Image (cartoon, rainbow, N blue to C red):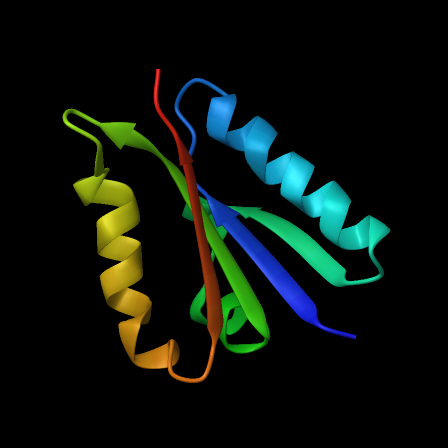
Length: 92
C-alpha cells in the first residue's frame, strides 16, 4: 500500500477543499493517505511518504507563494530524490 502525504497551504479555503478531495480519493482507492497543513509539516512527514502531493494557491501572476510554499519546497529538496511528487493549486 502506497503512503501518500498531502501537504497544502490555503488562504481562503479553496486549496484546502482540493487537498481534502485528493485525500478522500486516495483513501477510497486503498492508499494510506494523510493531510497536513504546511505549517504543521515536518521532514519526517516528507521522508516516510512514497508519494507527496503539494498544493497552494497561485499568487500574483500564477506564481506559488514564496514565503510559505517555496520556502518549504526548498527545505525539502534534498529529500525529494526517488519520490513521486504531485503538484496542485488554485487561482481565483
